Amino acid sequence: MVIDFHAHCFPDGLAKKAVPSLEQGCGVKAVHDGTASGLKRHMAECGVDISVVLPVATKPSQVKTINEWAALAADDDLVFFAAVHPDDEEFYANLELIKKAGFSGVKFHPDYQDFYADEKRMFPLYEAIRDLGLVAVFHSGVDIGLPSNVHCTPLMLKNVLDNIRGMKIVAAHMGAHALWRDAERLLCGRDIFFDTSYSYYSLGREGMKRMIEKHGAERILFGTDSPWKRADEEIENILSLRLSSAETESIMFRNALLLSGRL
Image (cartoon, rainbow, N blue to C red):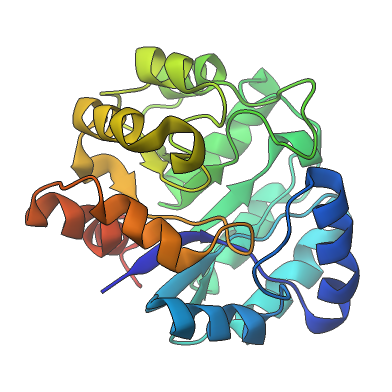
């Protein structure tokens, strides 16, 4: 079984605009068209059983619309996390709706949402996420489409961990894209999950294996950042590490099942 814990897709009409714009901004060609059906076709081609889709609201006004679409688009193949926004004045009521609707977690992209991950104003929102038993996935490190002014660093996530005990956090891109030495120094061994998305291309076999061994395979989630990496190639990258069968299974699907509690 393969669960891709880090995937993206958009409503059909939005995908036609969003994907070309993102391609231009990051200089990377998408591997599918960014629609839910396109993601499913890619999954079938590449041997992915379930994708966890991580939508991002760039404005508070988008939260309700995105989550309504996510609830309708979810099925046996696509499990959606919910959108949240740090400037949403009704964040607690919306989190309760997210929990009631059956979402397992939420996604933050501090660069696109213009906040620093360890701002104290975020702590009540984080506490609410923790108290409701939701998982919080953070884009962490450098976003190649927005390379300056990194809003979520390993040090910031360490500060969150130190202040919000018991919060279930996933730091995307092996702790922090392009800041992997800091992630290894500050986050490895802490009670936080890393996903493998968009990291092997730079870390390589030795760097990826070293970080997994230091952090523990039980806290690693397979992810592709689809549509920005091919899932079959990312699967092969993990298999090339030659981890034990138990470690590989943990990364490829078991950790995702345990973390979400509902996949």
